Length: 155
Image (spheres, rainbow, N blue to C red):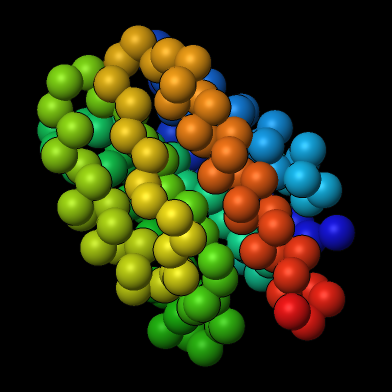
């Protein structure tokens, strides 16, 4: 069983948290061990990041950019990489929510490409988050879990 960490920021409306929960549900149903980390509650530690086989990243669109805590996560990875830690190359999926802008996709994918192997399309959800976006996240979580499982058994 592979381990996936779902790293996300969510506050006012809880849309990104709802997407993170759906993604985690899909990954668990596909057999992965999943940990959710809300970056507005705490930072991701290096040891827990290194212990994960894959990551899922979620952010709201704040002024056409990532939430500050998610940018801090990318800054942390950058510093870990510069210090020689093996942080590059994990499979990752991306999702975001917005209230009408939705322009965070480009900088989000740009930063993710620096460190991760993106699996699938970035999922976008305009507020209020509906069932269709949650179902897409659930399916993406299952896809990520299957990718990790295949890697573990050498397929």
